[in-house]
Length: 95
Image (tube, one colour):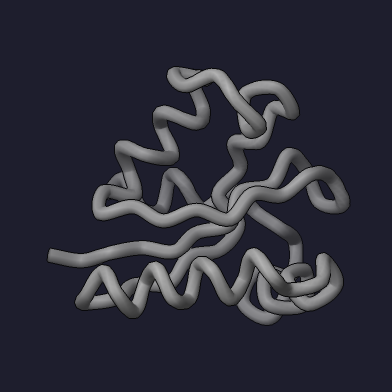
C-alpha cells in the first residue's frame, strides 16, 4: 500500500495545507467537495500542488510532521521545484 504526503493550496500565494493519506485521489476529492468541515473547507483549499509517495506509514507521518514545521517560504520552494506555476495536479492523478 502507498502513502502520500501532499500539499494543497487555495491559489499561488494563498493558504496552504499539508496532509497525509493512503488514497490521494479520494482525499483530494473530499477536500474539493468540502466533505469535511474544517480549515480546508473554510479557506477553499482544494488545489493539489505537490505530493510525495511512501511505502510505509511511519515514513509518511514523519515527513508530514516535518513539513508542518517548515516556514511557508520553504514549502513554497518545495512546491515550485517541480510545479513552478502551482498548477492543480488533481487531474493528472485521476488517470
